[in-house]
Every structure is written in C-alpha cells, then in structure tokens.
Amino acid sequence: MEHRTCIASVAEIMTRPHWVFDLDGTLTVPVHDFAAIRADLGIPDGADILGHIDSLPESDSRRLHRRLDEIEDELAARAEPAAGAVRLVETLHRRGKSLGIVTRNTKGIALRVLETIGVGGRFAPDYVLGRHDALPKPDPHGLAILSTRWGATGGSMVMVGDYLFDLQSGRASGAATVHVDRSRNFRWPELTDIAVESLEELAELVRSAG
View 1 (cartoon, rainbow, N blue to C red):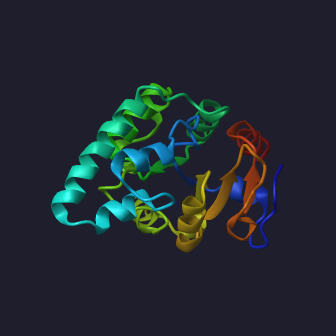
View 2: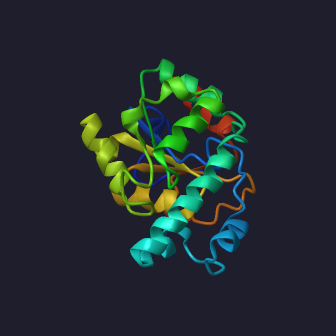
View 3: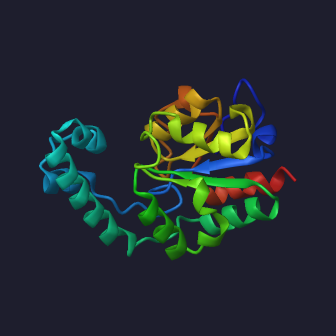
C-alpha cells in the first residue's frame, strides 16, 4: 500500500540519495514493552520516557539513564530484522545510497543491534546517531547532523520510521517521510508521504524505481 505525496512522486522519492532509518520497530521486529519500561523506571503511564528522565534532577536522571541502558542492552541481544529489512538495506547499499540511523536508543546499542540483524557493515558509525549524539526525535537535530555530514539538503533525504516522532522529525527537516505500519492503520497521514505495511513492500518500491 502506498500514498502519494503532493510535493514529490513516489518514484522520485525512491531515487533520493540519502536514507535515514529509525531502528527499533522499523529495521527490527518490535520488542520494547514501553509500559513495562515505564513501570521499571517509575515513570508515569503515557509519559515520554526520555523527556521525563531529562526533566529530573541530575542525579536521578543519571540513575534512570543507567537503568534504561541496562534494559535496552538486554533487549539488543534479542533483536531480529523486520521483514524485508536486510533486502531493503542491501538494495539501497548496492545503489550507492548514504545510509544513516537516528534512534532514541544509545549509539553503542544501536551498533550492536545492526550487527545482530545482519546489516552492521552497511551503516558507517559516524552516521549512526543515538540519544546522546543528538536531541531525541521528534526534534530534527539528528537529521540536521546527518545532512551536514553528507553535504545534503532535506529535499534529498528520506526518513523511514514506524512512529509519530520519526515522521515529525522527517517533516521538520524537509525530508520525505515513509511510515511503516504493520497494522495498516497509518494514523498520521498528514505527516506521511509514503505508507507501507512492511520494509519488504518498500524494498519492492525501490527496486521498481530502477
């Protein structure tokens, strides 16, 4: 399933040279139980985890960041590639695309996950940004850093993600946005240029673009 954007065609977006991905739930099968993580950290239901932690006094913030790192380190060992993830990354790599990650995870854990799912060699470490490298999404800071490192503009970039924050950061940076939603609900059409059920579907769109 795909939705055409009013500012660019699907075919044009597929040929853009710079691609940025969310990690958890996008390139990987979702494993995070955010309600359980909030409960473990003593964070109120529904609160943004990173925003809440960063709002605390410094000593409490450091303590909860350490515990969050421990939780995510445990989850990294269980990471599995989402359907079509390896095919999509390999297709983009063969076509000479720049590939980056902007995640609310840490960079170290992100690099581990990429290796675990079999695409680590396709993402240069300088293009993998975690929560300590850039302001967390929905802020577009991470995409701005990557655009500078690539010498790119937002109009040459694509942001691929499974959640609102990914789409908001992509839209704010001027990138085309791809929403991956296994439920096919596609809840944020106003922020979405292309909507796909899986990365397998997106890989096929890339292949068809020639």
